[in-house]
Amino acid sequence: MRFIIHQNAMGFFHYRLHATNEFCLNLLAPLTSGREAARFMQTLLIPGVASAFSALGDAMVARKLFELVGSDPQRVFSPYCWRTRMALAHKGLKAETIPWRFTEKDAIKSHNSDKVPVFLDGERAVADSWEIANYLEDTYPDRPSLFGGEGGRAMARMLNSWGDVMVGHLASFIVTDVHERLLPKDQAYFRTSREARFGKSLEDVVADRDARVDAFRRYLDPLRLTLRKQPFIGGTSPNYGDYIVFGQFQWARVVSSFQLLKEDDPVYAWRERLLDAFDGMARKSPSYAA
Image (cartoon, rainbow, N blue to C red; front, side):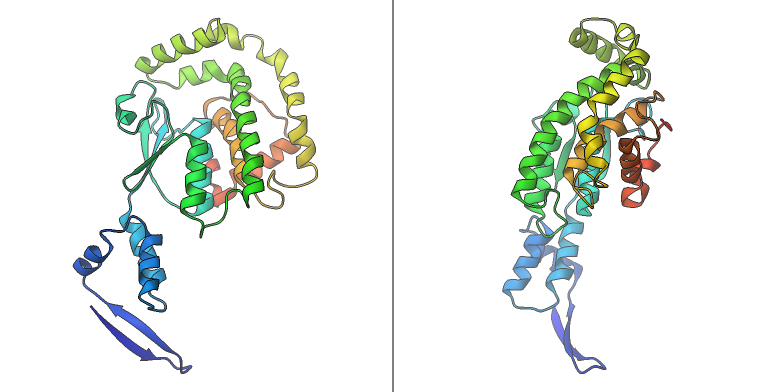
């Protein structure tokens, strides 16, 4: 490795690092993230090199995300996986998607989970969307914040609990649609487990959904009143609170053509804004125009 000092046209001196790939790999081998690589270079007092090593270190750390799919591996439909997808996009982090199905428990058993999402960041495995969000916030503080401080994190925790309850309400409208999107082996598991949960057949669960949807829309009034005053739950821009609630609606949109929201609803307009976020990532996912 050698450093070359250049003087540019403006008279400023800058450094250029020349190193073999083998040297870089050996240098960064003990480091688990680009952030640690950057800190290491900063201790050497090498101006301008830290950011380059940060990018190199991040490229060396393989990030993977186990996500729930059905018969179509491109149709990610878990509300919790969508929370994590949006959180990663917010942080500007890329991860390889690993399609996972209900009956593939063994694929994530070594990561101490039987549900997805499961996020792998190098050698570190994190399960549960809320835990992943906190991990991303604490591990990548130099990236855009998901919470905007500890107060925002506390508020997001409440929304996370409310969102978990909301999943049950939404499921009662789309549970048969989910079933239809699964492979036969997963359909058997899903029917047995969900019928035990609801205490009735899947068909009976959704039988009166047209009559119940207005009550569900009224249930959203606190969200609706908030979105009449501001474009996002997070205020002028979205934060993890938005992604928690959005995950539910994206889940429904991916698996079902049932119309949960009216087009003149502020909640519908908010969902549209998030569908367009991150270069339309969610809108580009296979889904129904519901």
